[in-house]
Length: 464
Image (cartoon, rainbow, N blue to C red; front, side, top):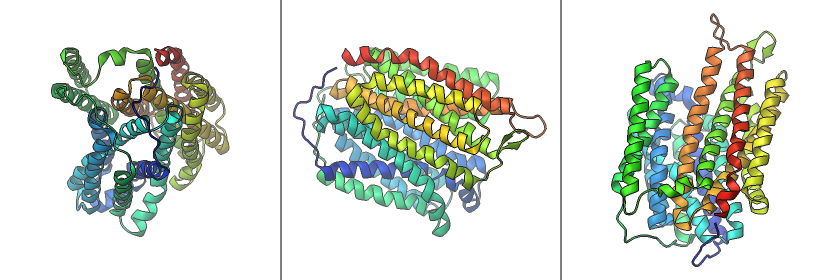
């Protein structure tokens, strides 16, 4: 689909820098909790399940907020909605950094979960303010900086929490977010709203939120394990019932929250399928590789500690950051379909190599970094393709749905990997057998191969 910009203007470098700095700070805020979990448990007097609620709260809020923020950004302007969202995130940062106990911290994290909606809003601003040939590159840069923030968050969480206090793991990124938002407010051009004369589909918004909430809660229950089969069946029926009700409402709405015909376009549904696959593979590797570093058994495993594992996983994080920028340039030059094809084939090859070659630390570290790089290429290509394959007025809702689907894919992938390791564990020690890791890598490789079936639809979608 060709670009239909009314009056594209070039954003000044300081404005782009502010948007990038904001993405960097948000990515940092998203990842600071995981490394600090043991300390939070001690300081707040909670168990592992209580600490896990902090991450779960962000996950649930983000899945609900992302599509709503994207749609409102399409309607009222990305800059206006982004500023409102950042006000919520900043307020959540203040609450979290001053929280005396877990309930107050969870309230702050509920507000901060709105950060997930910032990516699609950034893509709206990029689409409206960048020349068509540079849109993909700019999207790649913003995505890369968000990923880079995740690396920074993982690295600084420990020193901040131990050197100052755990409150600073929330306060420091929030200060940067407030500063970056102020610069965005001053330098970023206002993007014109659209469809202001049509009514807001509030029933559609409510049903989509309820569907996503039910889906995320069901997935989190399954992750916890020990859920009766009847409860699983009930969860599936509730999610399916809400989804059907939402579709019925959207089909009848004058101005639906999500245009169902857009979802049926090959470029969109194929991107959704691929996003689930890429996110699931990444989550599976994020579970399998560190676990293999940690375990120590006859013939496999390395018995490494947390710090050593973190250093060995750092190249993968850096590779993911580099892939964002490289992916944007590659998509602009070759198009999304060739980039995705190469990335998916390379992913399958790396996973086969992991299943066969995991006898040395360097093999796991190098192959994990390669998988992160090609996975980052695929993610950037998917976001860039989706942002430019729809009409400009639908950029926010289309990319936000993709961001939400990534969360779902990550949850599913992590659960699959965990289940494989649990099923292949020694009954006495609980240590997973080597065959369990090989099975996990092989299943992830099969997902990559099957993803190629969706790649073939990408060209058709972008030309429509």
